[in-house]
Length: 210
Image (cartoon, rainbow, N blue to C red):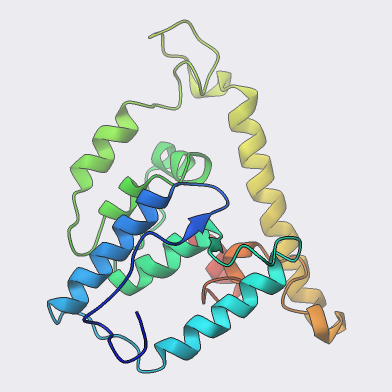
């Protein structure tokens, strides 16, 4: 949003994720802009200051590529915009298989159609049903032949172990927070999700929602 013209004028498609795609990010931004123009959302009055603060955090984090001003962290960026839209998907704790998909599958934009404005949960179900946990690509199998979850491929097991290790390191960082150097206290042991794009960890409970 150029200063003095928000929210009537916006430029989308400039954010470049270090993983993920530009169209997915632009789509979510377009949904937010549509809500602003319709009067269903209000742009924060200090949006320019927030943008500068997030840019400074990105420059500090991506220290080896300070010239890439449009570089963002895809998961953190998507979740931050989804919070503005009101479509951040809740973890499906009561559906064990879907919960595994939530934690191990790519962060496809269909996840952000589960709840909120423009929700189309049937679209998410249709996509995930095409990629069940126990088929070739996720579990070792012949094409079209499903396997029990216990026969899951190393990919699935590694993804689960990596997610668990990251959360343990983050919890360790919370415990050691007072002992860490003040200059880098907000970076130690924290996943990028809680460092970039205005996502903050308020309590260990937040780990269960990422």
